[in-house]
Image (tube, rainbow, N blue to C red; front, side, top):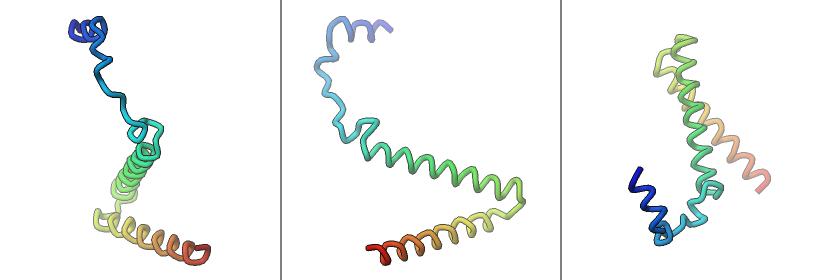
Amino acid sequence: KTDFINFINDQEWKSIEPVSSWFGPSSLLMSSMSALFQLSMWIRHGHGYLTENLGIPVWGSYAVFGLATLFSGLILGLVSETFG
């Protein structure tokens, strides 16, 4: 606590460079990282639901997510070829 108060009183904060806009909370990079984190949490909860609530074996859950990844890639590729 004392160090923080001295940091403010001695104006040591002026010697610190601000965070660049690229790493700011509202930047595209950080928004993308947040979206990927939310996706990973959704996948984790989905895996838990499939294995714990539905009783699907772990390998079955992996197969479901693998097929979902494969088909979403195929659909995205098809859409990009059609409209690209």
